[in-house]
Length: 135
Length: 119
Image (tube, rainbow over all chains, first blue to last red; front, side, top):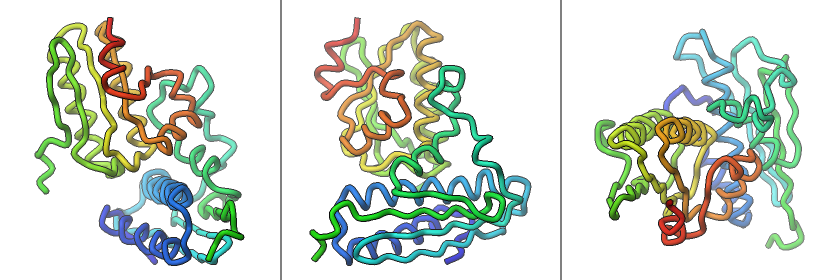
């Protein structure tokens, strides 16, 4: 899916991914976690990844949902970034900054997160906490 | 829905201004900006504002919304006002815990407890 920078397109991608989780019977907490991570990843891609690029540039989203896990790759067309250069928003000198919490939330709610292509692709995986309960 | 329509429900209880949200999902950048501006106008509307933000019926909240709340917090503090948050869904509360914003904000389980906490 290639959403443009419009709320309706972001909502469409989120609905498609969450619909897949629902079909596999993922619990509410899982859907909350995946939605939050996807929302933050898409907003980061458009706001930070595409800073200075034409607004019509699209973000590429690839997702795979199985009964045990969810993998989502979000690729923007920007030059990338170094995740280690993102300031920790919980340290005292940054705690009042209004931005910088998206990546932290993604890492907290997903099971694993890594960056590729100099940071322009974010790959995140969510493992179902109790896969045996899936029916 | 036109962007000029208020995203907030506002009611006054004595000296306390209680605000809740019209949207279940506080994600959209334009809406968050509008919410931030509306909250700032409320804080600026009277000296030492006692503001209660009630999250009843809110299902999702993005980091951009947290940013707007941090800005409101600074504004309230700068005007010697008081800010309380209440009725935060347990999943959303986790977002506050992870970002350690549960230490910045005074959060109460219910609006009643939040109202009673104003000095």
